[in-house]
Image (cartoon, rainbow, N blue to C red; front, side, top):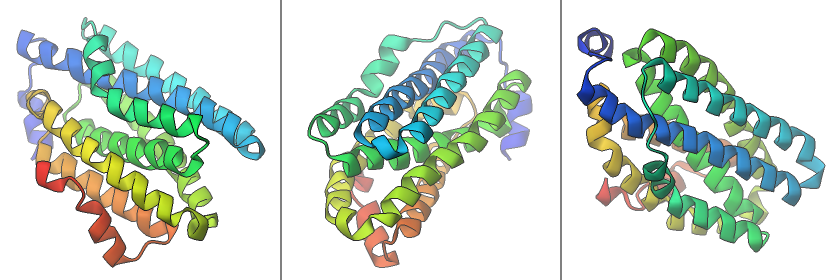
Length: 230
């Protein structure tokens, strides 16, 4: 169905470009946030610094790729909108980093932001213009590696991290549902349905929590936070 939709999209229409200016800005800002967050995590986790700085560089490359996608359609990304869009997650990450709450930082960046990105890119690829599709397909492969870093670290430290993970989930998951609501109309213009975004995010996030060590019952309970707002 999504492939059929893509053939009907007019990538040069003013309506499409207007929506794209915000969606493109969101992915650029998301990669910028990730770049900065992995730099900060490298400071907080010196033994993992080399790997985290490598992830950070990757995110910077992704940002440049998405900037090229906007230029390809002659669209100027609305970066002011995107910074407001990410403001709550940004603030929560900064506050956690200042208090050395590494587990919360990893939940926000390596689970929530990565799963949000993966779900958005998976739903976008079938409806993207040819140039953006190639860029996004390359990016999404990298994002799975970034998700894997957070999973592996949290899995290795699961018992010590569990309580903080649950608290961080309670604080930050409702923000994701609000973000999905805010982007619903623009995403629809690009051929992306909110229900598909929610479903893909839930699958990615649930799988990540399972890989770390949470039970199915835990995951159902944790996933419910803020879902009523979705």
